[in-house]
Image (tube, rainbow, N blue to C red):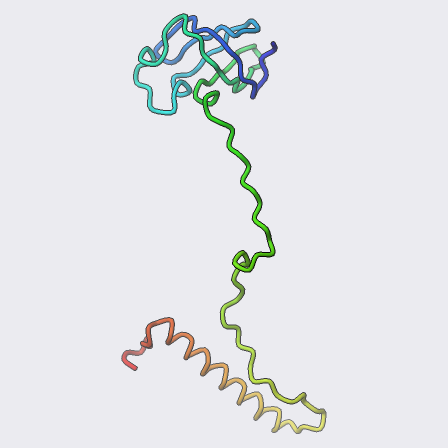
Length: 152
């Protein structure tokens, strides 16, 4: 069997060094398992985890242009992470919150073209004052009822 990145193969440890282990693969060829790829925990001494002649399951991490095969024992042991199921989009509790307390203003009769400029300015000032009052009330409730200028 040809060693390709991502495949899991059986092999036999043929040599140990301070930095890793050499593994002869079932389909022929030899690869190396770096010490950081031996176990999911910190490995100080590789000889505590492996010995020459031990059969191991390895995952091919990469095959270099020069034929070097990089292997991992810990990734061969990891179960494949299952895909998280997609949450249904139509559940009531699954919707993102929109903008908080967007001021809608008092619903009034539609404006007519016969209003004078003064009437439109008076209406604008009234709406503006309502917006400011609502904004102050909202920010006071978020701040526990205290304003920045001191006391209530």
